[in-house]
Image (cartoon, rainbow, N blue to C red; front, side, top):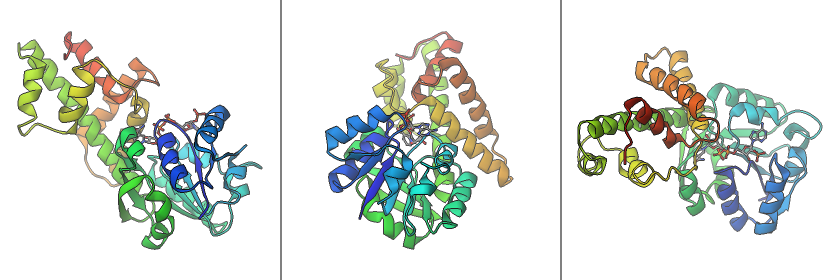
Length: 295
Ligand code: NDP
């Protein structure tokens, strides 16, 4: 099996490192070429000059870019994916994408005899490093089975969710729930801090009570109370994900007022904090409004 990996960002890079460890014949490509050549030197794999060159020998191609539109933008042109992909290859898109664009990409690839599954991941950059990501797949069991040896190098729980676009939809809803947890945990702790309760005591109690979540149990103790706010997952990407969840809800005529509101709050936080801020830094907006620090 010959893999290629395109997109060596915060999570793509450690995922590609797992693939490189299992498949030394990996080829990588990244828009900023120095990132690909540094990776290639470190992991002793080939760095390609462009997407077509990256995929020319590959039977399984993994992409991990910010949005489905970014993946779609790589399809065309003399050095694009369509110019390079072999008939019978499969594109595994690990981008947290949007279902409609994934379906469009799948049908364009199908015209060339190339298969597609959406396969967004959860588990963060630490899960990528350990190879313990959850992978949510949209496609068919047969296509998933074909790509499984590559997906297994970075994924632990690998679940077929339904037809193409299903993985994207599930990922977006999961991340909308994450955003809601981040925002409401910040509101709750800011309120308690102002009411005279030490946030450390508040979290200690909440984390053995019914208001707890991964956000309260892990993100707040490790990133907010410490004021560390490590930049592992950009707020801009979470804003994109909630927008997808809100869009999927509208398309399916499901009333989701809380999701729509949190989508707006994160768009506003993105405007305030910029493109490189981490998603947990949204807490700083709540703190600023409340005039209190959660520490
Ligand atoms: P980053 O912003 O860290 O990296 C993005 C990567 O995509 C970079 O390699 C960048 O290249 C490349 N890129 C951006 N735009 C384009 C484009 N138009 N054409 C070609 N390449 C492009 O993102 P992450 O790695 O954090 O996220 C990637 C995907 O994974 C996103 O969909 C995100 O939502 C999802 N995800 C991220 C998680 C995380 O913890 N970080 C967790 C789970 C999912 P360059 O080096 O040139 O900038």
